[in-house]
Image (cartoon, rainbow, N blue to C red):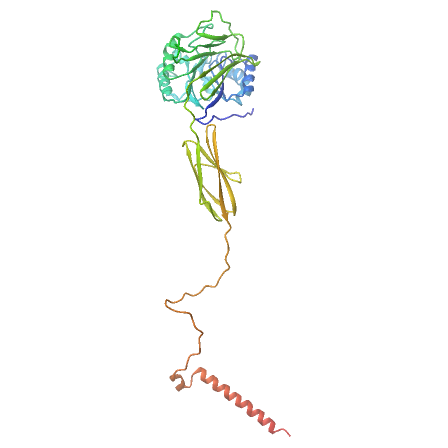
Length: 438
């Protein structure tokens, strides 16, 4: 099976689109219908609130009730799961841990609980079975997980914070609220600035009013909205008790998933059935720091010269965490605020530089002018002049010295005498021939 996934956006992206579901891993037709509905809406990823694998979380059930019915969806949409009580039936969730690849940033480096950032949202997945101290201490302890949770939330500066796990802190379904868990976890979530909590376990859908402590948040007071999203494919359970005042909406007649979008200071969500019916929708708003403008300046040094020309391309960006890339005419792309390039061919070379930060993109263009190298005709080497010498004059024969005259060995005088004697000899021969004629 092949598929196409989208990677996470840049840390400062302001928008995110994801899905939430739980209590689905039965292999049923309802599970498959919900999976097709999610795939049709193309969220960036999914979070699961547990009971991914019924009935006992075995390896064989993982294959038949999870991978087969969810395979097409999971080939295109990443899943960030959390442990449910059904996974715990077999070796405290070990087959689940063996078959899924999840973040492992807790003290023990396991995947039982973890956190991650996606765009403007910080997500925290908890192991609520461990928080109820059902897990053996060598696998997970409540104290260790709660200490980690406090530190993790305090360290995050994300605009939005969302937690998800299996057992509900607020529910009017068959099992009701797990109050012992609420007393230990809710104060930490509130102090850490959590906005939403997704849970499951109940095979229904329910949304609360903003809650604080054991009651509704007072007017003007920050509270957490809790949702049970346990209608992902397992058999639904009808409500048997009267709807409490803190419960805004609940539904036990439809399977479906929660579709969530975060866009800057607004979070909106809707519960969608496989047929496309929306059975609940709501939105939250909160002040979010304005997005910092992206600035880009670039230059080429030198920007003109003779081929081949070596050029330093440099960019300055604000904020400094923006990603910079350089695109050349031949299709090559280089990354970094500074790159070096050799332009071998003459001409006007256009280079495009791009700065990207989240959804913000700024581009600039630089032109590097390269001239051809002019060739000069070859010349003979000229001997260097002696210092102080002027222009040279034509040379003349050297005068004979007195010693040469005395010895009769002067080259110039000997040559002249021989020439004269030869000429006299020729005249005498001609005169003799004339006298002998009759």
